[in-house]
Image 1 (tube, helix red, strand yellow):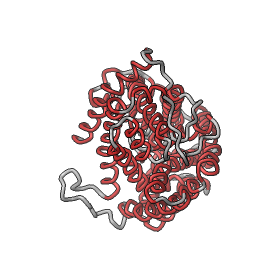
Image 2: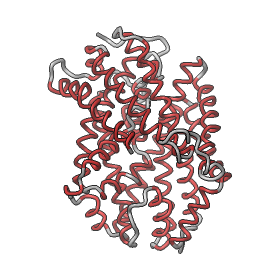
Image 3: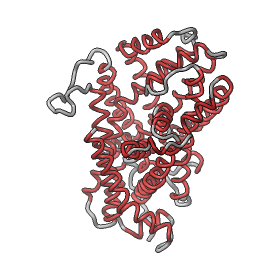
Image 4: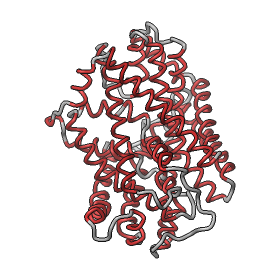
Length: 463
């Protein structure tokens, strides 16, 4: 059965390359660069990476395929909730399933309320690097530099505003003039910066120590907690249940293979995370610095190294330009389903939807900006034990990561595996009925994925 034709359906990607650039740009975020390498190194090196790959391809790929299939099958709108409702109606399952897409849109909107602030940090540090402020900086001075940034509400608000303006402007121009044009510039810049930094790190850093930390298998450190961390890392790194893949799927032409491109996107996301480790850790180990400080590794530890290395001013700037490119490509993608939902729900133009959504994102995002300074002692949900000591930023992060995303992914897998039209989804996937690939996908999406997502939810609730 052919996919239904809908009036005013979303436009298509201009090429497969731009679709892949946008999808990889969404998946590759700041977490790939500062979190994945450290988590892998501290939890068994390549043993952790192998488990991560198992989850990335066994859980991530089936869900990415499912979200793209929902988006292309719906076609009535780029809105995740509209696409899910349309696919549910085709299967006679009821429009209530559209609310699952609404959960995903809410999750990605909450993400943007704090991601814009973190993206602003990368811009601030890019400017600092270009101005030579890392030169000769000591550990104490570097910590003070970052503390002064987060304690300055005006400076944080300025960069938050810059990120919001760029994100809204690019999305307001639509698919071709906005998203596609931006990723054609930003993604080559990201990969170019990464290649330059990898060469620089290999030359001036301790590549052998970095490779040993990241790639030496140590199965004795691969605990049950580490396995759950690998599952969670695969889940969040790929960007499952954030409505983005459904929105991007609505722009897919019939000639695009969903399974093949799902493997490419997940593989590229993993490759970037591993390469990031070979960029960061040679520099860290060459200076006897610790690799276990999370975001502090990037904003407190690395400036010390760049300030002491030959060419550190130039390459420190290149590194933070890499972070800026990763942050902005993620912001553009994360904001796209919010705009599509607003356009669909309010019945306004795409540009108007971008500005309305952007105004809300900017205003509410100030809560995160001020949670590092003016509202640092404010705990909005202190009536509950889980949120007792969490700031606005920490509350948003916890609800989005530990509640909305797992719930959305669980319901999406249940819907696509048990309620969606079997033949229609199989046709979107381009898999032969009764073939081994289709049977494997169906087993994973019906049984394995829901159990894995439930494990993430329970693990997050107990954290």
